[in-house]
Image (tube, rainbow, N blue to C red; front, side, top):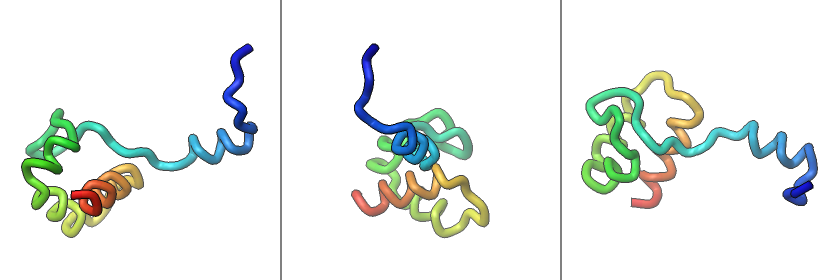
Length: 70
């Protein structure tokens, strides 16, 4: 049996956290890699972050990640 060395509690904590999105599933960049859009049109990411009334934890995390690292 191959084990990760993580406890069940640690694994549950990690899997319960939002993760970065890799691809947009909506909007004008539907189907495009978020990393590509961040490079080519960071203004779109800023616009999304500032204008969406409601967003998933994954989208919020993804936008913050790319806006802070571009």
